[in-house]
Length: 323
Image (cartoon, rainbow, N blue to C red; front, side, top):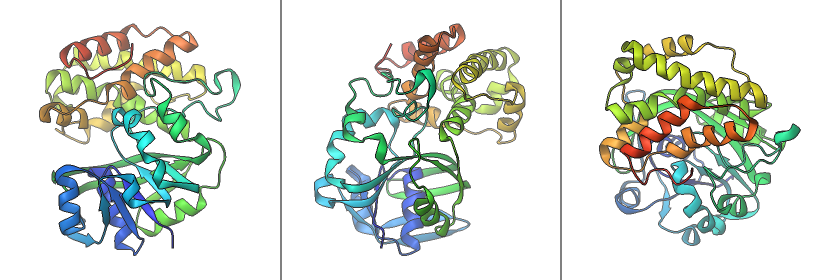
C-alpha cells in the first residue's frame, strides 16, 4: 500500500493527511512542537462536514525517524522550505513522488515550461538553490489547493469549505496514481496539462488581498468596499496579468470580476492576516516578491506591485529575504 508523509501538519496538511488516513492509507507526519505532541497523543483530528474524524498517524520531529515514503506531500509555508528541504532527504527513495501543495509560485515553476523562459531560476523563493538541489523537479507533482481550513489548536484541523485539488507534473510524469489516491479520500481532483497556468491564476487572485489585509488588518469585504484600495489592488493584478500574458499563462477574467468572486466569501481574514495577527512569518516572497522578479526577467514593469511589496516589508521587517 502507498505510504504518504505529510510535511507541514497545519490546516491544509491536516485535511489531506486526515482524509487519506481515514481511508486506510498509512500516513505519517513530520511535525514539531505542540503539533507533534498532539499528533502523538491523539492521531489525526479533522472536523469536516459537521463531524470529527480521527485516524492514526506515525509522527516524528525528524525525517530520519520516519524513513522513506512513496509520496511526500509538502504543505509547509513557502518561506520555510529553503531551510527545511535539505533535511527531507531521508524521506526520499529512488521513486518517491513529492506533491508540492504550496502557496504562490514554486521553485520549479519554469521547469518543463518550454520557450525562452525554460529553467528560469527564482531567487525570491529559492535564494541559494537549496530546494532545487534537495528536491529535483523530476520528483515533483504540482498541486493547487482550493479549500479553506484552519487549526483552532495544534493538531486539530477545522475544514471549512472546498475540496478541490489541481494536479500536474511540470515534466510530464504520470499523475494518475496520485490523483486516484486523493480522489478516493474525497477530494475533487482535476489533472491539468500545464499546472503552472493554474498556479498563476490562483496567485493572481491572492497576491493583493493577502498583503493588503496584513498591512491594514482589514477583512476582505472592507478592502473591496474601499474604492481606492480596490482600485490599487486591481492595478497590481493588471501587472500580474501582463506578466502572465508574456510568459504564456494568460488570464482572461477581469480583476473586477475576480473581486466579485472574493466578495461572495464575505468578511473573511486572509491567511496572511491570520499569520500577521499571530506574529508568524508571512509568505511575502512567494506571493509578491517573485512577481517583481519575474516581471524584471521578462521585461514587464511592476510599479504597483513594487509599492505593495515595499510597504509590506517595511511594516513587517525580516519577512522578505529577496530584493
